[in-house]
Amino acid sequence: MEESILNEETIEIIMQKLEEISKTLQINPAVKNMRNEWLDLQETCQVLRISKRTLQFYRQQNLLPGSKIHGKVYIKVKDIQRMLDDHYIDESLKLKRYGR
Image 1 (cartoon, rainbow, N blue to C red):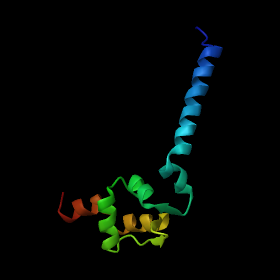
Image 2: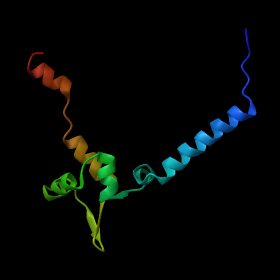
Image 3: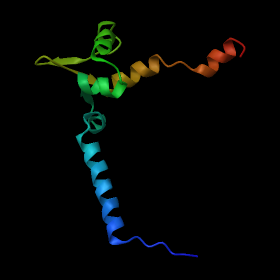
Image 4: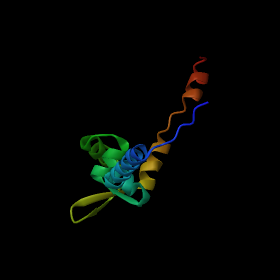
């Protein structure tokens, strides 16, 4: 049975990749600000994977409340979660209802 030993070059490559991943997570505002309580509109669009127009429609329909400060709108993460929870569709119930 052969033993596999990581040489210094392989370890260096692994460390570089880990640093790249770490930097990506630090730069990405959607990931970085999920720890915070508020997201701006761009971050909200990134998290929900929707367009700015769709987000505007949700806000016009009062699906997502927000706060406007100096012309910039912020949305609470818990309000995003509430909207998703309120519109959750349980497919298993849907199938039972229609006899499938």
